[in-house]
Length: 326
Image 1: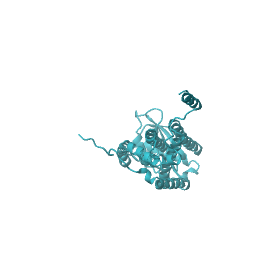
Image 2: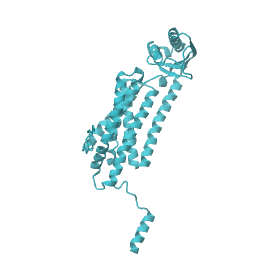
Image 3: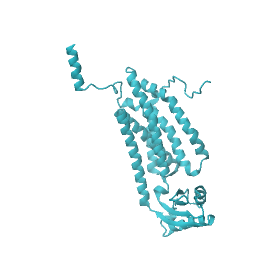
Image 4: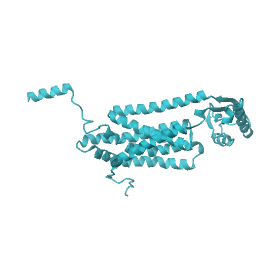
């Protein structure tokens, strides 16, 4: 039985032929993404914007009905709530975003919390109220700050790893590819004003992991070919390396998309932002590994001698002594 091959053997696509136009387009998209973030801003969720937090215990149930609660509270007109188990399986924390008209009204935030508690108590008798507290903007600001630190730390650690594993040029290329992927993801959320919450931070970290994985596979093949084909021009060698890893890249991306696209179309609204971010990340991560991480090596001066061990002073003296002895 003949195996199905999505990518034929010995493909010879000249990816690097269009490296300059694609780089220009990518830089324009990155600039546009940051312009959208700075002008339109991100639609922060309760985690980052603050709001009202209600904690409840369902005394007559072993587990809290998370899905039903999300539909019930979402129907009150305060947007999609953030609902999580809190302590025991029958305890929940419900965070909702406060309307602007309520934020500056004395007692308005607590009134919204009371409305949520009353609606849940009417549907689920025997619910015990444990708390009705306001999540301050200061706390939300700390969440945003820590999220930014987490992303920067992940990107810098990855760049350092690639630097140690390969050469400094590869570290710079990997970091630039990650910056490209994160920028376009943030641009999408700013453009469509999708809710930006801690879920999306997790999605961006997943995108960074996927993009890094694909980039390292390409870089590893480039390093092997630099040792094998010492006289091959670098653009041709990069094309060869990308083509040799193309089947693996396509199979990995399609496998992920098979799971993500149905979830994107038919999944719950609470997971739409997370799924959309990862789906976009699959495309931009694959693209950046080919058209961002690989071509930049040409401009950073990588050549056929990059992975040839350099002769130290002691080695040179030993070699000269052997030559004189001969």
